[in-house]
Image (cartoon, rainbow, N blue to C red; front, side, top):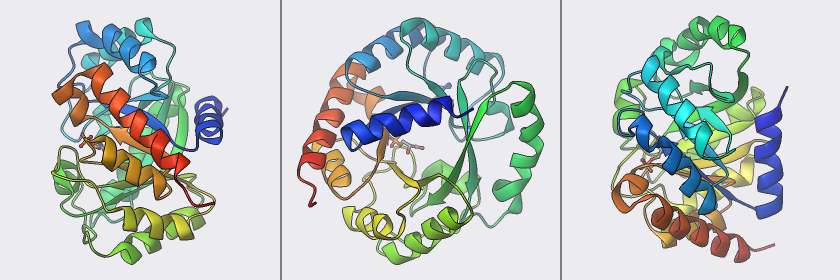
Length: 254
Ligand code: 1GP
């Protein structure tokens, strides 16, 4: 059962790079969820991710996802910052391991505890190696990551390659939600060069068309934005980012 994963892959194959919108349950009122989902789809996003490092879970996440489902048919993928981020109303869950955490709880411990619930809910689990780059934001702090320096792409590359060798089909380079600027296009390029089987996701601090363009051009498969949607509005911000992605893909060297 790889319905959502297949859908992501076919969108990536078609477009070269896709946008996924992140919704933090703490910041999005379930009443607004329908509008969010409808506008996001209209602006060209391919999927919705729900979660956050310090988010509350339970009924709040359930209500939010139910609302999102009424606005469009976009797949909803959980992005759990903790054990409370699991909801049976989602389509899939990023089954993520913080590869550069210093605490085994965030590498395999939380995953073991969550696994039974994921099975009981029949959620599609998509294996994801999560790698946190400096400064790392709240994600880095909460998951006790030994953050990779911004100017050391080769350090990110060895973690990403390890993720691929461990069988993870997606690798996420995370700079931290709401940070000032995204990771460098050079880091994306260096990581992409070694990771040729797993899909590459980039997120954290992407706000402008030009940033999305450079990251897509450097080889990202998925660009995630959350904060800019809260700052600039759903439709306008997503159109800016998807426009940048399209330009970047067209400028790729073949
Ligand atoms: C955070 O990578 C995501 O986990 C998105 O970051 O909120 O900065 O867009 P932003």
